[in-house]
Image (cartoon, rainbow, N blue to C red):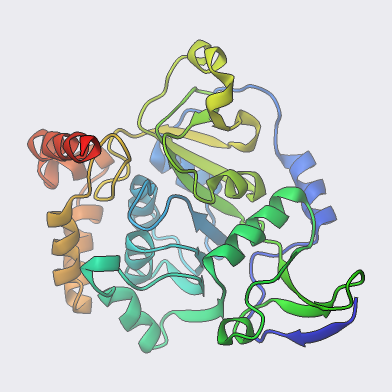
Length: 330
């Protein structure tokens, strides 16, 4: 195929599909093994400084915040992150100095709540680099190509835009139509973290509501950490096999963390903790405030349960649960 134009963004998260396939065959077990462990064990074992990582969910919805806090607690460094719809998770990781490179589709804003103070400041001062840009659909195709084991997906998006110019995509002549087509490069993250509603001890996971990009992301990732609201018996998974969104053989770690998306929303289970998100947005206006937040909610605790007690405990959590049920009926 004849290349017409190339984006100027840095190509991150890409591997030769054949090399990646060999790695998967050599390193990923297809045995149904008990993968239960703690957040501390999962992060220590499967996340290395300097890697490319992705976080599942969407915006403030179904984000594995328990792992985000543990990444900060273990002081993982020099991570490059897929900013596909990264909001609260990436703001904390950049603010804490864990992530210093980002490929951005949607980042550095807290949606209707306002801008991300900590991560925007880091980008503006050069502590964090935006190395490439892409669209949300572009990330869907990057993970799709990674899942399929192909180097790129041909598409009609991005062409003729400034986003294309800052992306790692290419434009080429289609061998069939002889017309320009955008080639979206595949993405196979070193590690991804996804929060699910329930799974068994092997990693067969069920997600209520929209899967967003997590179907493709789970299958494209080299290593996958699942956090779950609940671990259920394998027999319950077998009774409804069509509900398994992520099969066990893609999963490396299963961590049971009730309320593990807090302060983000878990669809049908609990609502956003707007008070806590506001606390972060207010205090993160300065670097000193970021450190104060981390000292209080991350470094002063040893577990996510201790963090939950700090943010209001069962009284706060039950209220968020009632809000989600009430709003869900409306």
